[in-house]
Length: 183
Image 1: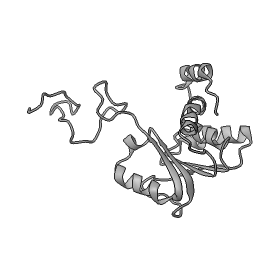
Image 2: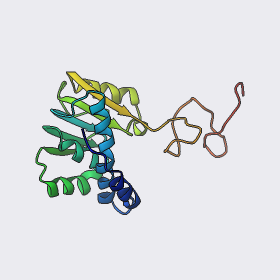
Image 3: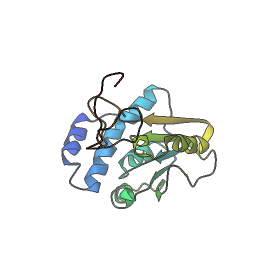
């Protein structure tokens, strides 16, 4: 079972906005919670793993300590500095990064045993297409891990604007507004 180091998570959370490198370290330590959750659910973090939206690369770094091969993709090359550098520092030769669009994955069907999508889908323009692509590259007995920030939480999503017809927007500001049923 993966050990969760709450002190390291807190320490790196306080530094995460200094640089992509610091943010990737925060992602690395925080990802222990995801791996522990998967283990408790009976999901083996082994074999071939795809992080379908890896950001700075911290999560795939952590996954590479468990799996045979890990690929982290992102449409913006945030991982180029931090993730690649951290992988080199740790000697992880079975961790690979690629600039790729999750809605058109450049992999053959059945390429991965585990596909992770952690706090990604809310950033994707076409969520059903993204999910179809994740399913396409998944091996027949593979697993998908999907987590997301709340889209329509009363406390607010972590995105300033969300494309959805589920709630009306204020015509002046373009921001979400709370309305009563029937209005």
